[in-house]
Length: 424
Ligand code: NIG
Ligand code: FE
Image 1 (cartoon, rainbow, N blue to C red):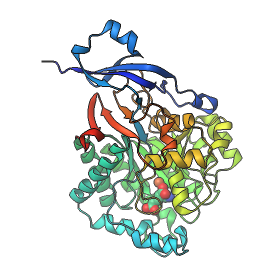
Image 2 (image 1 turned 45 degrees about the vertical axis):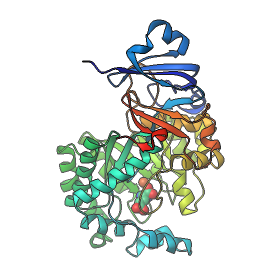
Image 3 (image 1 turned 180 degrees about the vertical axis):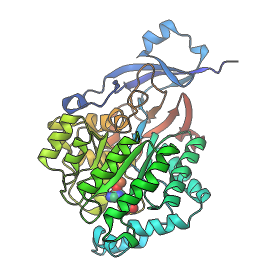
Image 4 (image 1 turned 90 degrees about the vertical axis):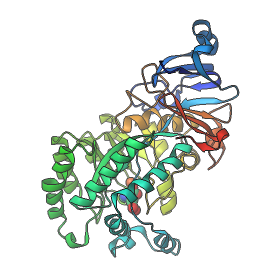
């Protein structure tokens, strides 16, 4: 027998975020809200969207599993488009050093930081990485995340990079969340390549990247383009090769130092450039012109006690801005979507509407999925979040606390606060 579809009715606000590509500049303010809205999902796909009155004229409630959203806001599932959620070990001690005044890059220079997560990830078995990753995704799901991007980059060698990516593929087969994988083999310079960064890039280009592409383990290639890590020229070399192999591009750009990462992202027509705390005016203008999504990670700036990226300025300059958590074991150990909303609105001066666009359709665009997810539009996946409150304005207002009551993935309820949490 055909499974019943899902009908969500009486939503105080159906925040559709309607659109199939990134929204830039002033377009980010229009959430296309339907008051007293309803939506029907069949076989995982959104079939009908409108007011409750319109839908109930044409469709019979008894044919559906019904979710009554009276006094609740309903939004597209959030997309966390920049995370490093698969890693071995933890760096709590390093965090305490940072609290006592040591700098993130200082710790990295003396073999800590990313390199210490590399050691722990090498030691972990794939099964251990899968188990830890699954738990983290459960937490993210409770915050309303229905699609996540995950990066490798805690291997820096053939075996461990592939192990990390394979772990993410296994996780994707088990967990209801969609997982988009990114190869970040050039995330740090391993100890034995110090001063020989070009040779390391050669190794990545000749040995690791082709295997990743051949085994279809990653859709994106990313690099940490930063002073004392990889230069603009080295980044260009690796990313150009990745593009030739059919991969899409992302960059960790202009995070600590203004290096020209934003300009490089525009030159290479990357899908997104991320962090951008120090991005130049020219880099921002170039990204706006070439349609590169500016993915901002305010929880990282917060955790590193750095100035926030110029989110307001970027939107005013016509950029498409996305928001993400950057969950990772070092610079930013959080999966908290509500914290990111709070920081983006309070400190980067995004309006609630812009922040929601940034976590939905623009985040979908940042993982090249805006045709499939990120809005409540007919034909897209039935990925939905229902809040405990009647308006999307409660998201930034309820600081650092989740307002999510239910999460629906492909038309199935996978998280329900009223039933004690995760149902998957
Ligand atoms: O996005 N900046 C580089 N990479 C990560 C941090 C990774 C780590 O510290 O483990 C980031 O912030
Ligand atoms: Fe990152």
